[in-house]
Image 1 (cartoon, rainbow, N blue to C red):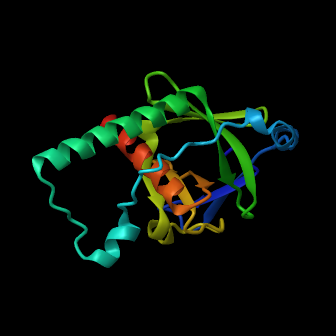
Image 2: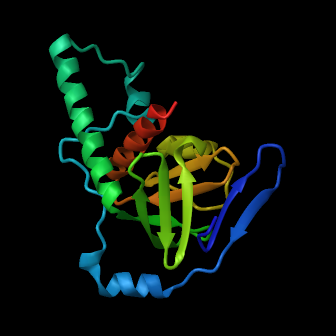
Length: 191
């Protein structure tokens, strides 16, 4: 990982790998002094959470919808994904979580084919092919990850096929689930 220190456990090896990289702290200083230049992810006000966290207490989590309701839900989902994609094509800043739990601003940009996510911290850039994302974990799902990075219910983690990971922390559960839902839809669209 290119972030200060990020880690993950390899499946075939029981030890943890920590990836070190140089981080130019001037990026954080620049962003702090230029807040208008830091576009963050917009969460639709009508976005409702339907995740492992919200369905665990309600039983099966299955909701029966009639055809009209299904059409409305599909339209809402399409608009939400469209808006998410437009934001990521222009670039948004998310807080990446370092191994020690500290946060670093990370500019996230998606390519026009919606197949590559570019992460930029300072002058360091890393690209992630969306087909290499094995899992997108958030909330209770994070308990299954064996990492030393302190993650909580406000975090979402992209786990790659090579078992490297990138975690982001959000302001609230709604923002986390919005990100995770949209990323899951985009990832599934590539299969």
